[in-house]
Image (cartoon, rainbow, N blue to C red):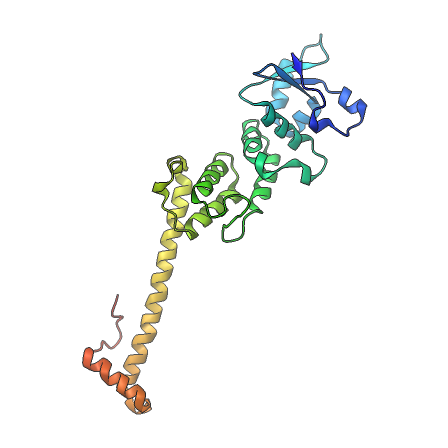
Length: 248
């Protein structure tokens, strides 16, 4: 096995801590990474179960397969687990793969941290220079990542951006992978927005109709200029309804 020396996530740690690593994560490439059973188990019940099943009384170090993962992805994942402070844990560049691995191993606490970190990169209207900028396809991509990994705050921001941008999802190659619940939420929001505009238009129409009716029945209250304008309107449409809205 090829051991990765000077693992970034173990730098600046006491030598005794580094030497106490009792787990080896083995990648498909044969490369291996040291880790600690207590730390992995603390973050993940899945790791805890794997370590329990793999435990042997004849060895102090357990070797766990870590398949379908590149070295860079594994290093980013372990950096997130081992980081001493929030600033060192997550970056926009590594967030996607770390979220996928955290979801794979049931690390709900780390997923919540990633969700908050990414969602905070977006404004209330869903715009985000750090994540997707004006690019609707990038927003679709991040929406899919968020939905697949239970990053619901990020999903809400991406949905809001796509709604605000009036995105044509049919033009995005990835749009077919948007989960149905997310599509339904966007459709419901779109319908609510339309209904809100219709209600506003109706209220404006009611006020306009009321003003016209009042002007018709009390022309003496109008200035000469207003009376001339009203006369023109009456000539165009002589019969005004008393209470109904013309465009209902």
